Image (cartoon, helix red, strand yellow):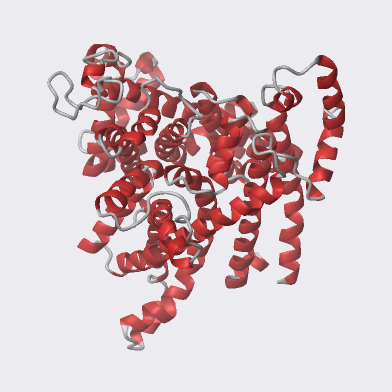
Length: 312
Length: 315
């Protein structure tokens, strides 16, 4: 039944009104592109961003398939291979001080780092967006209260705040993750609140209010989608930052604990052997660096694509 | 201007109260009974109860907070459990060491970041601009703790010209020795900030050189060098100053990593050791001191900004 509806893949295309509208929209000679399509086109032209996206996708796949791809158990020790250099048979990237395979540990470590980075950003973003939307849209004492609380969180250097929270909850990977999520909240809240403050005064929001659309629907259907651009950019850059800080906390002994195969832990343990076996600490650091670099490149590319005015 | 300073300073009071409250609560939430930690596992129930009473731990939370805050304001920051000495003089000494590191890192970052940003902007899209921006992204993406280890290996161990740990060589108290010890950790710390400053300077400069008064200066026939250094730079650097101020926060936090890698006796090293040893009075003091100094640095930045850009004062 969709055969006469050019290019329509929308699940609701069965809706008669929608179909008519859609057919008239797609004139054969005029190509209509949504802002999202335009942004994607711009992003595709940014070679660095595309390369980064592919690299990150690859890392995600490797992390998901870690149990299949890792040649050995990441915690399996083999003292005969102690400090084996890279390219040792059976140990492509060498072995650490307990003879554990570094490649396998890197693969499993990526799983932790990516999971921590993405989930911490997700938690921070959900809470920050909620707080920012409510404060910005309703204003009044609630907004003042929220902003004061956020000011207090922002009065701490981010890393210090994360350390303070871990100090309170006790060292460990989960607590470190919770800590960096909390640290992230104010940034999202501020971005969203800023956008909401200007959106709130715009005519389409007034119009929605006048025809009696409930606040919740206005917020979710009209206000939030318009804040998405800056949020996506911030989140992309933030995943990198969070991966770095989570690894940093583990490096300090406050996050993931040995013998967990986590990049920060590996780096910290390899540090004792920088004179005899450099690769143990250099490789996990390089892994963090590459992932963070890719996320930053992608974030920059997304920003340019979503808001070409900012380019320069 | 005086009014602006007064206003900004007063607005800090609730923030500072919030900071103390947060620091207090963070340590209250920490698992474990301070009395138990101080007396050790063999303490009897009566001695524990007595110590709890002496420390005021049997009082309601808000009473404890007010008592604690009063003591903090009087300069009594408690005793470190691990070091068995007063917290305040110890962390002040450590903070001074951290300040050396932070200031030197900020100097490095500005002296490289600002000229790099200007050059990039003046020669936009040139090879040097692209190179500088790629380098900036690399610097920004490098974990401090990894860069520290690399510098330690390359400049410290392989080339062997600089000390790789500590703050002073045994039996030396001169400035040269101190600076030698500071170079690697402060370079490590400076990398990310340099990158941010370079990017900020570039975009701010690009914005300024498109403005009418620069076109006027050009059409008057002024030399480009003069236009950039006399006319454009003054305005372009104003937002950069704010960024430098904000980055001090990054330096104060990130400094923990540099201090750990280089075993540098600053406040970050003391704090992390304190956390691992569950020395809560020490940790509490260190966090409070760093956060307060960050708030004050931000105040100084705001005031400088308002002084340089009158639009802020009357905005």
